[in-house]
Image (cartoon, rainbow over the protein chains, first blue to last red):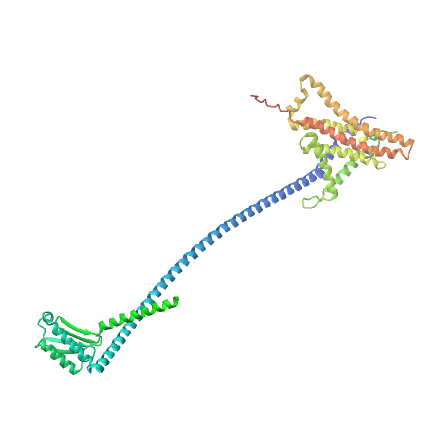
Length: 256
Length: 231
């Protein structure tokens, strides 16, 4: 048993060659493969971590957006509610104003109708009163209403002579106005009665549809009149009193 | 009985005699290299690893783990060296089961060559790691008086490695030869099994010892602990 130094040298060379061969064909491919796989695993894990972080960021963003959306929705709801309330108030105010306007128009129309009705009733009452009075005078005293009105007016003129002269001044004409044309006999009697007080006075007769039934005598600034206006007013007051009394009685009956 | 394969001339190349030790070493080298080439030829990151590649990865990572455990840190150069040492010795001893195969590690020349390579590798790794001055300083540690002892220790370390490997492998072969002549049908099988076991253990021990020696030479010098103010 001895050491062959040539073999030793050859074995050292062989060993070094084997180190190179295994380094070239074994260790490096294996280690590089392991490193590549570890790098790939690390990269995939990093990608997974990144994906997870990205997913968490997206989730966070989604939650924030949802929260913002909820807040915006609440704000929008509140805004819509306020707008609707304001519009409701505006519409209510407009409706109230329109109703008040309509009510005012209706009230004005009602008042106008009432006024027209009252005027119509007034005229009807006056005509009825005149017709009744004329008929009663004709039946009871065989006289006409116009004749009695002229006679009554002549009496008033005689009684008020001093005041009429002062008020009439230097008037040379007396204008007698009636609702309808006076009969000739009445005109003649009234002319005679006026000239009995004012001898030089000229008398002119006129009719006026708008004037209440009766007679009006104007001389300058003086005026003497008798119309059924006051009687109509008294008749209206009497009717209204009776109507009021009737409604109270009906109300009491309804209460019972 | 011819105990050394160095004396067996297998053939001649250009009048250079090739003995059995070198011849069988080439066979081991060819087996290891061709096996590595065949297994790693289709090794790409996008190809899933097959069982052979996984086996090689387990072996290489096992060697790397052992080196990292001994050296305290990963060292690729040391892996190439100690790993080849282990694979060569282990493959040589494993091929003992092939009839007619003479393991090259049964030659004192081979074990001496491996021991010498370790003996040369230790200062080379040390100089590479620490620099020439840093490595030479280790011979006068802890004092200058220890210089001859450290030199003797360095050489005896290599000699012990060589004798250890040779003795174990050669003793197994010698005992197997003796028992083969006594009981030719029973003992050789047992001895071959024991030879495989001791061969693997020897490969492991040889590689680990080489790793320990090289690691001790490449280890960074101990850092002195900074003094702490105690107040």
